[in-house]
Image (cartoon, rainbow, N blue to C red; front, side):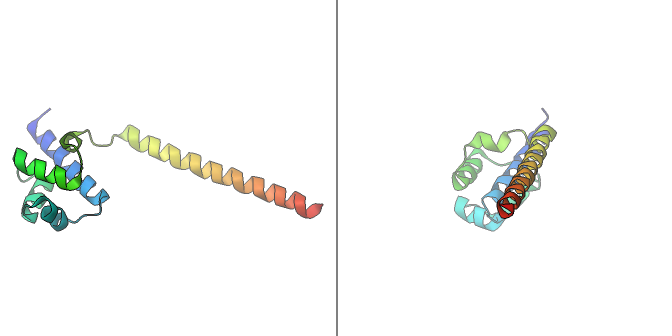
Length: 109
C-alpha cells in the first residue's frame, strides 16, 4: 500500500468518524488540544501528523488509533446496507398487508 493511500484512508476515516460524532473540525481540535488547521490539513491530505497528535485526536474521539487506518467501506458493505433497506421495506409492506387483511376480516364479522 502506498503512503498516499494510507494518508487518504486516514483523512477519510477521520472525517467520517468526526461527523458521526457530530463534531466540527474546530470542536474536535478543541477536544484534542490542537489547532483546527491541523484537523483540516489531515482531512485534506495536506499533511502527515505525529504520533502525539494522532494520540490526541483518537483520545478526543474516544477510539482506538487503528480505527483511523481501517479500510474504507467497500462496495460490498454498501450493497449489504442497500439489501437491508430492501428487506426492511419488504417487511413493512408485508406487515401492512397483514394488518389490512385482518382489519377487513374483523369489520366483516
